[in-house]
Image (cartoon, rainbow, N blue to C red):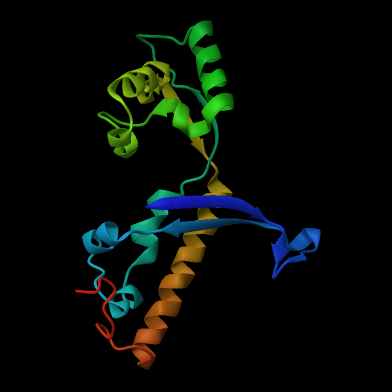
Length: 167
């Protein structure tokens, strides 16, 4: 999957009024990911649970802080490292989980080691989620679910009508 986030200020090459500006989020899903989700035809897309499937990919973070631990209190050096990482790379500065990231296969072994060395381990930080933004994203995905299920119930497209993977 590939995500793209940008500020939308124009529509049909015309400048939008400031109150119509918004953040646009697009997600491109490749064939392998579609197959993993059980999407083989256009009809399968109509019955997909979008909120459940995609909400986890759109978590908005508005800040980061050190995780408070009694046995290992945060040092000033750790606080500086967290602040520098957030300023440099946002969420990408923090090792979110164990093992190599998905894109690591495209990197050299030295680049993977260097990246891991620069990242702050996830158990040392707390990512602060942007509650309002995440709620709006969840609501938008839920509306998409409703619209798609309405099309299925109205018979707009029979499930399995057209193949997406071109057998």
